[in-house]
Length: 275
Image (cartoon, rainbow, N blue to C red; front, side, top):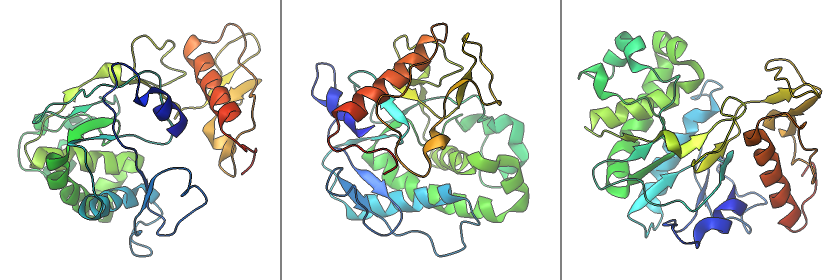
């Protein structure tokens, strides 16, 4: 992710500024000298109840309070986001820009939303904090509420069950509504292979889903394919250089994803599989 950020940062059309990796382990790691990093303290032991994403809002609160942030706007992204072209500022002072997720459906959970937000459920956008571009002053207001709501939702069994693994995303969306912030919804922000088959004019490839295919290029989602790329295969260490490209009939978005990873690993010095 950082490799492709650097590739496009200074190209025409880019308005990207500095880069900060927010590390919420509480301790420095072996990437500190390679990627600009802010080390945040984790939540108290046990508070996350095994839901590691709960640490993210608290880490943002610490970063916003303690770091020197020269830019007026903040682009929130994740390690599995590959930037595909120069990224301009898609936000305005009062309107952040964010990707609309099909699985963030506040109206479906009006009862749960109503526990934490007393306004109309339609005021809650179908977004998470990432990818999003937001003015720093807005995020300074939203972040503590995002953090507090995440904790409260996790401690509420009904809400925890309803929102599941995207609870923290709902907390960001509801916190934004609490502060009267509406997002400009940008479907052109990113694609998510294998479901999105071509890049088009999108800015990000998000490789959250596994890509499994037969050698004839038939998708076998949910079943390990004869050819596969799944980030979960590399939980214990980095992928090797020169990953095998997908079969010829696989959608272009998947082929581009693997090619971008291969270019990055080829160019990053001292890259070693498993580390």
